[in-house]
Amino acid sequence: MKRKDSFRRTSLVWLYFALVAVLILVIVTLLLSAVLFLLFRRGEIPPGPAGMFPIEFAVILGAILGTVVTILIVKQIFQPIGRLSKGLRRVSAGDFSVRLNEKSMFAAIREMYGDFNAMAAELAGVETLRSDFVSNVSHEFKTPLAAIEGYAALLQNKGLSSERAEDYLQKIVSNARKLSVLTGNILNLSKLENRQSLPDARPFDLSEQIRKAILMLESEWEAKNITFDLSLPDVRYCGNEGILFHVWYNLIANAVKFSGQNGAVRIELRTAPGKVCVTVEDHGCGIDEKTLPHIFEKFYQGDASRSAEGNGLGLALVKRVVTLCGGEVLVCSEAGKGSAFTVTLPSGT
Ligand SMILES: Nc1ncnc2c1ncn2[C@@H]1O[C@H](COP(=O)(O)OP(=O)(O)O)[C@@H](O)[C@H]1O
Ligand SMILES: [Mg+2]
Image (cartoon, rainbow, N blue to C red; front, side, top):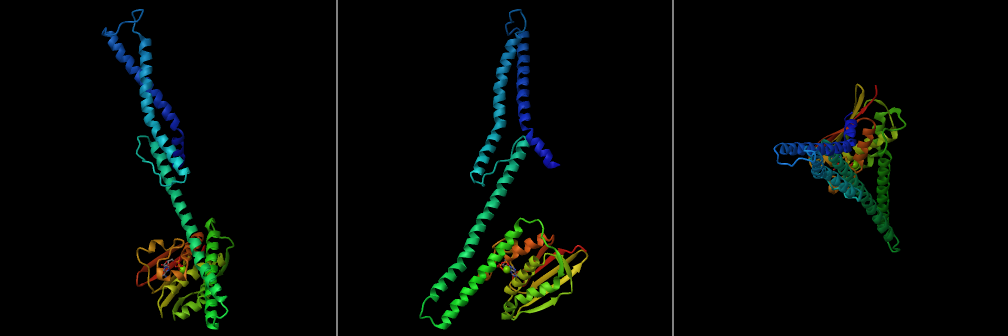
């Protein structure tokens, strides 16, 4: 309703201007005629040919003066439109930093400038996201590709010992795996980017899916001797099974990755009327206040020392999937103490 009103008001701008111009012209002509008439009555203006008030003279002088005043005032009104057009030209040339001063005595101009500024800000945000995404993706691909190329070149050396060769092969395999996870994450994210909902909803056992995700990460948690405290009652959930798996996998992978040696991870699945909640809690390094607002951004990695182990896409994917399911992710974390991620999904029951 408000949008419709504002559209009508903006599209009537030309009418405002025309009315203002005519009004100024009429007022100036009338005022001038009145002044001239007074002067005529006092005998300070000579009478016309028939001894009458020279009305033609008053009208002509009024029209000339009125036009000058109208031009001056309308110029003031049209200046903001000129500024808007200049701004639009800069935006179309790719400069999204331009902003217009929203101070004006006309509500329509204030609104138009406000809309322009909002548009420029939105475009600037999209542009930053796009260029960051492209440079991040290229960088993330370049590093493992360069490593694979380098180790493969070293392997061509005929006199290499078998241990060295084994080591290089291992590095090639792990970098290739990294590339494959990265590609998978990017593909998943871009597939979900323009969707409004998830397809193929079918009922499945949520607790079993979470157990599968834990098992898939066995080599990681075994290497750190991490213990699990599980509370996973049987819960059937109706949704896209394949995509939801990424949520638990990424949350548990993070809990393991950011836990120390001999750490403990608690995973709890519970139901409430109309929803299911899953909490993944660790007692690892936690997240500081500066990092916390950014963890769901694509390619954001808070801990530089562990950045080689991931690509900063895990939580972005978690957030996207959970949002598409109509749910939410809450984080409770304290630096040095640990983190708890709680996913709440509507269960439709
Ligand atoms: N359980 C956790 N404990 C501490 N920090 C975490 C945890 N989960 C996520 N983070 C922070 O959020 C960032 C983004 O996580 P994510 O998107 O999974 O990327 P990645 O795991 O590849 O670094 C991590 O780099 C880390 O700083
Ligand atoms: Mg991760």
